[in-house]
Length: 149
Length: 107
Image (cartoon, rainbow over all chains, first blue to last red; front, side):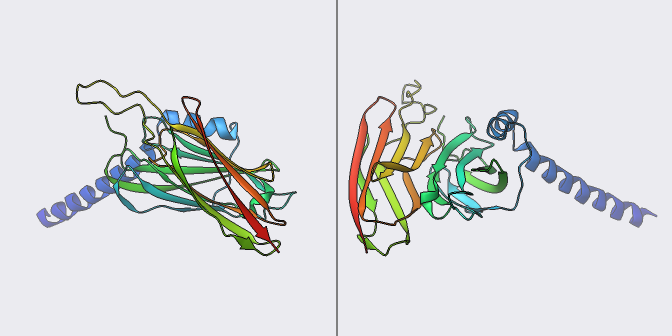
């Protein structure tokens, strides 16, 4: 009986840890970031799986984190990605950058270098000329934050 | 103000090619959150807008916020159908505009 209790306790502990990790990840999107997302989407739901986000898994220096974005789009005059918005859930200001594209881009591919304050979710939203919305996110572990203060 | 704009654009391309453009400009992108040695907040001063035009038509624009790293770097693509000139402009919070230009020959 005592052995069972010990195993039970261990399992319970492991379960709790997993729950805590899960809760922590969703908590990385504070209200301001949600408001920023809503501002872009106008409250409509965005489809996931259309945006490829390239970010390091671990960013040692939060001051300059390379980010590249590819959106699955034909980029023709009738159907193109017109806007891409980057939001960092754990930064003092959630807004990072907004890109405005035209069919002249040929491909919906952009890259830049961003600042991240802490281990957080980077959210990328895209809007097409036809009004479709896409959203995907990536978690980045940040060793040294890049916002000073 | 922004300084020393650097551009990487192919000099020639074939009609219909999708070319890649890379730009970098020297700027501290002071984010307004850092404090100086006396504990006073250093005021925000960033490049807040970047625009690229080709033959006078806007092809790419970015609205920058303080979370863009110092010396703003951008990579994007343009489908070129004819020879022309790319013009770039970086707009500072204080209103100064830094510009650069480069032509491409399309055959």
